[in-house]
Length: 106
Image 1 (cartoon, rainbow, N blue to C red):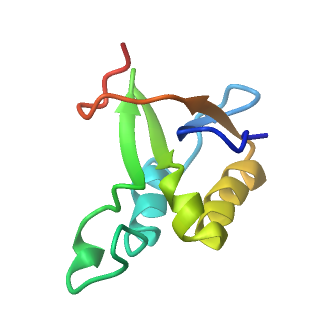
Image 2: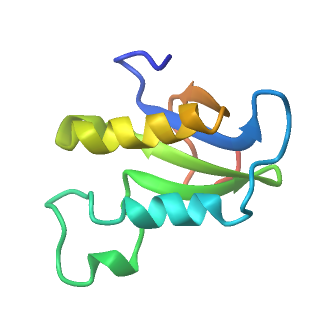
């Protein structure tokens, strides 16, 4: 369960029993679906870049998606969609405060 005061949520491409989630491009696909949810709403060409609220990352060799809490404020159904995706696929989810822009945990 994700608390209501989480700043960011990290969805890891590892199931709760430790298996790598497939397909290998799942993070890019999920972030691509969420590309129109962004500050100011969808704009011309916004489908060509990831939303700052839902970004794929590779952390220590694991595909992940970082979801910012601003998505929950702007589009609660989109927030629910992403978290339900993680739950339905038994992916590991954790709350994080902030991740560096370069995708390196530290």
